[in-house]
Image 1 (cartoon, rainbow, N blue to C red):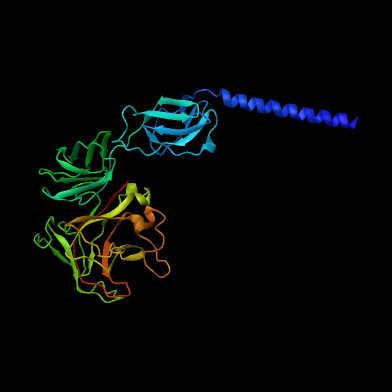
Image 2 (image 1 turned 30 degrees about the horizontal axis):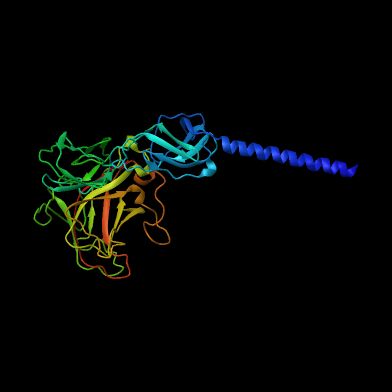
Length: 397
């Protein structure tokens, strides 16, 4: 009896196994062509009609589990097939070269499976031009201006403050535009780049001598300090009115005497950030100024503080990491985010952590600016000869 029972169990196991095997074969053999019903966001039940490059989406349909390739606008996306099922594909929209989209592939999603290919119409949002920096935010008419940014596809126009339109310029790739500053600019404001996929407007302000200004040196808002104020346009061509000239012979190692010679610059109290904006993020603001160097700068350091308080200090030493030192092609705009004003760490000023908030750094929003040239390095520093102008605190995002 026991033998018959064991034989029955064995036959039953064989039968069940056979059924699953047949069902599996039937499933593999009967998988049909893929179809796409919709595309939604990664959040459940959040249908989307368009997506940005870099965004994660879920493609929903049927017969998708054997997918071997997914393309957006003709550009293949990388994916993890472990996130696939027969009805869902989780995928990130890839980066797209918008000036190289294959014919007929604009705003399409192609899914290739072992059983066929399906194409679905879906809008991929192209990025509008973004302006991140200018070589000189105070450039004079007739001078060369470099606009840095991204997505400068099919740039048609550069619009300067006062709606002055320029159509003659050079675009390098999609990240750089070189243009001659036009005549007739009488006001300050943002720049605009008009491209194939829209118009980008800068956060930065061009030719603006008012917003956030601590001193232009023409306004007289500068204080004591060992520096020279001059309007000699021959000494530093491209200057606008008065500027500060800081010059020093070679500086010995460990020389902190910033008050000796012409090695410091100080302003009177001015508004860094308006009272109404003191709750803004610290990362939204930066100290900016224009700088022009006579000789390459290396080996010495500028320490920058507010109101002579060294609790938070910014180290301005862009020559570090440059074997030939730091140079400028005439007047150049320098940007020091307020997050670069840091505490002392391990006995070294300005290497700790930023202030916890904008208020923690700037207090009531007003104060003086102090810029000091020292040599905190272990070796002597070469001579320094440079000019500075238009110190201001402005929004950068």
